[in-house]
Image (cartoon, rainbow, N blue to C red):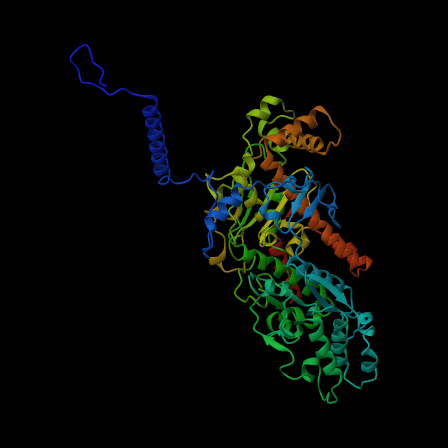
Amino acid sequence: MLRQVPNHGVAMPRLTTRRLTIFLAAVSISAFCLITFLTTGVPSAPSLSKPERKTTTEPRVAESITQSAQRPIAAPVKPPPRQADDAYGKSSWLADPQALSKVFSNEVTLDGDRALLPNLQTRQPIYCYYDALDKIHAAGNDTDTELLLMWRRAWWARGFRPLILGPDEAKSNTLYAKLDSMQVSAELKGDLLRWLAWDTMDGGLLSQPILFPMGTDYNFLPALRRGEYNSLSRAGNLSSALFWGSREQVHAAVRKAMDSTSFGSATSLLDILDADTVVEQVTPPVLAYYNATTMAKKYPKLVLDKNKEKFGSLRNELINAHLQSSWQNSYFMGIDIVKPFPDHMTAMVRNATDLANALASCPPTPLAGSCPPNIPKCGPCGATTPLVVRTPKTFMNESSVFTIGMVPHPWTRTVLANFHERLNASIIRESERDGWLYSITEGLLGNHRSRYSQVLQFKKAVSGDTADTRTLWITAEDPFPTELDWHFGFAIPKQIIDNGRSESPVPSDHINDKDRPDLAFGPEARNHDMDKELLILGHAKDIIALPRSTTETRRRASLEAWHMADTEAWRFTRATHDRRTLERKQWEDSSKYTEKQRLISDAGWMAGMNITSGNTRKEAERKAKARD
């Protein structure tokens, strides 16, 4: 039945309860279907959906790098255990193969005073045989004592562990009784004793005590330091000057020689063995051999009859001069004393300056202008422009430049920069954060670099693969080292000439240019208010050495926290130097030393020892003429 509308509109059906229920159900079903259809076309959110398993075999490099960078590094729960020989002087350290990739040591050691250092490289042993009663090779005076010291010092500086063998080691070999009953020449017996002594060791290198490493070398000696000996070998063109091999290889060669029955006119083990038993290796010119043939051919003045009594001392003086001149030729571009802040830092680098001047000077020599036997075309000291001593603001890591760095504690650098003994909170806040390390690494990394990269680059400069040969880093507050002769491999001159001018008979075209004094002397360091600088530096050393808690030590801790990178560089340098000192001390204690050898060893160059004298080159030439 239709409902009548008062006005003349359209008639509408009546909406009953049943119809309303059907209508609402239809709308609900339509809405559900629509929503379901639309959501199937929208991708799932990564954070809510279950990750899909991928079966691809391609490496996900970018994903792994991102995940490793975002993954937090779990800090150690407790400090790492102490290691053997992990402390010396004022330093303690933890040896770790990943040390050069860690920015701050305390993240691993959990100790602000314990540095994280790379593992100490194993020094391969190099032996020489010496018999003081040998009438053929031993000298009739005490010059052999100094020669053996020079031999040990030169090979130690090249990364080896030099040791001296003698008759006691040869007699401990089970084959010695057989040798004692053999009828052989005295020269052959002496060489066999040398091999018998080496046979009791654990392989390595066997050298003559008159063989010295000289010159620049990037391949030959580093390969020998790794201790990987494929066969028993010897250095080519040097007769029996240098052998290397494993223990098994040495033992097989010695047994083969002792079992031989045909000695004939043999004078050495090489004359007995087959040619293929000892492989002759091509050797670059990095070894200087001062045997009788070389001395007579290249340095005939020293073997004259009137020099017979003094031959040993003259030879030693010549070898030491050649060691230093070959070092100077390796760093022909000069010596850098890194000085990032030139103002008021003269006292801090004074010892480094004295050392650089001594290294650049000409050592005493009986034959001025002579060259090592393996470097016939060298640049003799005094015949060319002397080494330039510079004070750059940054470290450049040049292979032809030797760098000396005095690393200051942040307290020392700040008080010297402010030219005042005391510090307050405002000075600490206003000081440039890690300014020393920033300036040092500017030449390597440029202006845009993080503190992390600065610290890592500096650690590589101090303790990397080539650090010992190109650089010397010392903390400014500790006593200057007294055993630097062992770092360089020769006796550093205690007297230096008063100028860099060459004297006749050096060719005139090699004499220094008088119009270019900067070539001879380099830039002079500032010397303002030296007395006050020394006073401030001495007070800074006292503050840094304070163990108890005082107002100054609390401010020192605040300064270290503000300059975290500079403090890490300082602690790393100190620990590296102390560990190097401990290593040599332990080696010396285990070596065979006479009292005289020990006295000679301790009589090296020390800071403040440079004595400016007359032209020692001219004096040496005068002595040489007198001998002639």
